Length: 118
Image 1 (cartoon, one colour):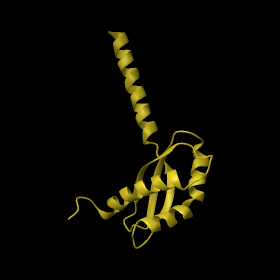
Image 2: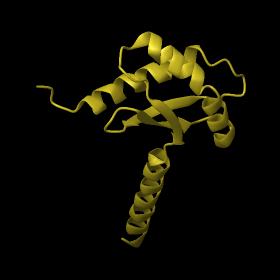
Image 3: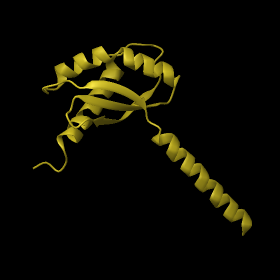
Image 4: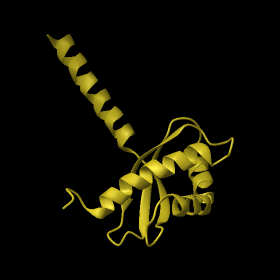
């Protein structure tokens, strides 16, 4: 018995493959530096939400470029992994890094105010 569900295992595999496809196959000079951070699979394995972080470039433009390359990605995924259905891909911006940065900033302010008050 596997320690986690099939949808999680497939999500991990898709994250690695999609990251490789974006790096090697998507040839758009407008595409900045991005990272595929997570893939959430539906329970029936027919849909995948792909979360990305954009470090360089416009987020909306990056999402448009990736959404226009969905066909290429599904085709490449079908060549690389053996599953009954290739999931439909939906790209989303991962806001967890921004959220973590905001928490760090707030903690820093609290520390500075505590240090200046002593």
